[in-house]
Length: 418
Ligand SMILES: *Cc1c(COP(=O)(O)O)cnc(C)c1O
Image 1: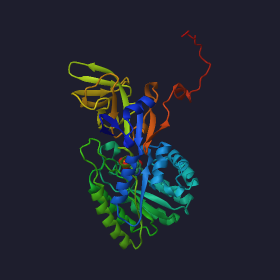
Image 2: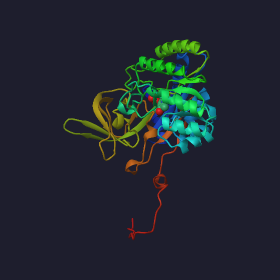
Image 3: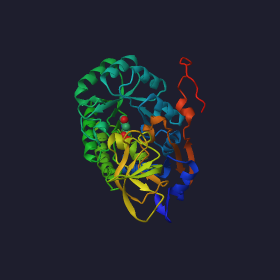
Image 4: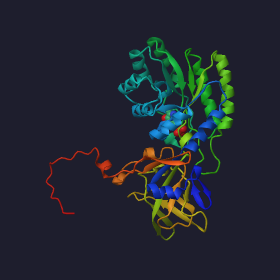
């Protein structure tokens, strides 16, 4: 979003306030041009013979977004059988889908197997059961390289006490299972967390996987996961993918020479592809001044965007009803009956009730983590593509709230005339 002639506009010159007028708010808006730009940055950064980017779709699974990302040539990284099904519905082929579950049942893994998608196994128990039941199905193994990385402990997944992946210290056990079951390991994988700034983390992890790779003669690909940090604060602090690309590509090529075969280099970014593409638009209901704080209370809350409360995440906020004039300091809060603070002491163009605020970087893990808490409706979603806007999810209504509830006639309730 940028300011053109005193108005905030999306790509193609689409006016942000008129989008709110047209579709109402709270509203998530995603701009495909930014997803495309991010995808291209990755493709350009890694200069290897065979590169595959698999979109970690848990970040944002609206089927139109999946279709757009498919059109770019990406594959899909999924963590649940439901995501696998969505991916297939969006047109990804089974070979293009990797299923990387954690602590799911063997039954669910069998379902994925029936759908012919690639399976990534992340614990010894399932490896043994799977290998015994399906020795002729090639698999990928998720390794835990024991690297502490990531923006905070909830999104850090590669450290020694993490529940994710098989510890590289347990390789002898893995090899024993592979040998006794005869299962073919065609991929190695790691994913050490989210919001990783330092290229060094990926390089260290890469060395761990390269070492392990020597024990597996049938490899087709090596997947370095994701965790690319994006620029939430608009201060330019994000993973330098050009630098990372240069270093990893060089090392990967050397590895392929040693290994004796050209393998595919894989990554599975979520946030990096869709975070910046999303803007969340809300309306200011109330301005409330206390002794020391000016609150801007908006028509949304932790039910629609929980990252600030859950992870202490920072989302840049702007008053898009005003592009200039005087500024004041606000604390932006939601309408939920719990403290749901989106941002403290933010400098905004002077806010009046009825103004529209925009939350930046709202593409990844925002709508996806929304809920009906306080029996509120979840927001609608709009896609901006090549100068046109498309409603891709309706606002909810009372039917959505009641959809799976079953009413029973077991209590005597006197109906009150409304
Ligand atoms: C969540 C997840 C990702 C994506 O992480 P981002 O930080 O959004 O890029 C990739 N791989 C796996 C296995 C994940 O669980």
